[in-house]
Image (cartoon, rainbow, N blue to C red; front, side, top):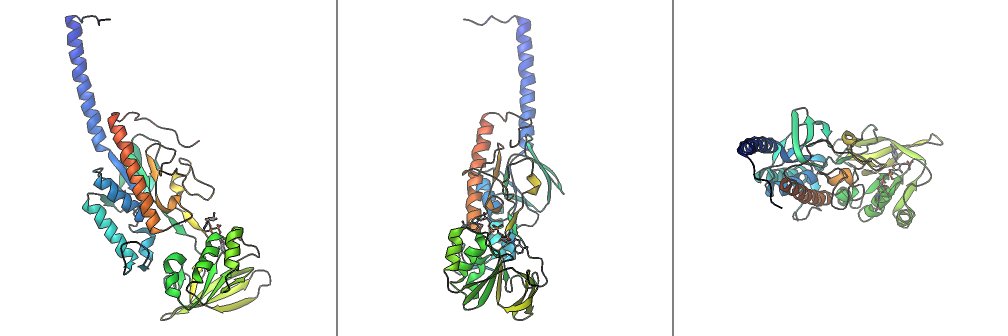
Length: 353
Ligand code: NDP
């Protein structure tokens, strides 16, 4: 069927309509241009890797990091990051990652995120420096090891007190160490540390372990591992030049206090994911980790997650970098598709059920 031929006035109307539409389209494109293609929240290995990939994909990423470098800034020698056969200092590795991201065009701002409207379109991220908008966001805010909060813990951090056996175990060859905790991490750390240490004491505040049967069996089967039950560490003691030398312990049932000479203390009492900012908008698991599928996608379209804020098992710089890469590729695909569709849906989307 043929369309009715428009009258002259209809033609003028159509022309005016066309011009108006062109103006509106132009305004929309301009607005779309002011909106970033991607914002990355977090400047650890996950965030900077996502920045390298999205920058190389010409997405001009904005990285918002309150303390660029993340947990690796607190470590000394990193010997398990591929490509550095002679070890690299944690802060050095992060400076290199940052420089690599910037070389490809990533913009990095040292700001603290106050609020993120993940369901808004475009997505809005408000920091102490202003409000940033983007079509996609990669959350890479990491996690922090839970601290004991005892005297001496901070003083001897990096000088005997460690929160990562995989990273630091190597430095305790032929020494006596202690692990605090009764979960899978503590048990895995204890078994791992027997490769280096002459003795590994596992100090647990109860007389029952929380860790899985298999991990319990593995740790208990190691001759070098000894358990100290119903006991808490009340003080980390040491000397300025020697670092950590002993732990003051207290039996929670008898109240007895004693001193255990050790050169290493591995605190393995869990991690706290930095996800509070997003609570109520995004799905968190019972431990507070952000839930993502195998492609780093959350249930909110355009919101991806990488690194330790979604990983309570591996927590390695290299696994964080790996998920940062995956999240970046997914964000690039998402934004490309959005562009193809002319940025539809600039209204609110629903959060997790
Ligand atoms: P968990 O929360 O499972 O265990 C923490 C342990 O630390 C508990 O035994 C707890 O004692 C103790 N603890 C907590 N706070 C204190 C404190 N202030 N002082 C003394 N002790 C304290 O953390 P994990 O890191 O061990 O494990 C986290 C998750 O990761 C788990 O789901 C675990 O299964 C998983 N995981 C799996 C691994 C694997 O499969 N290979 C390896 C590592 C972790 P209490 O028991 O009394 O509460």
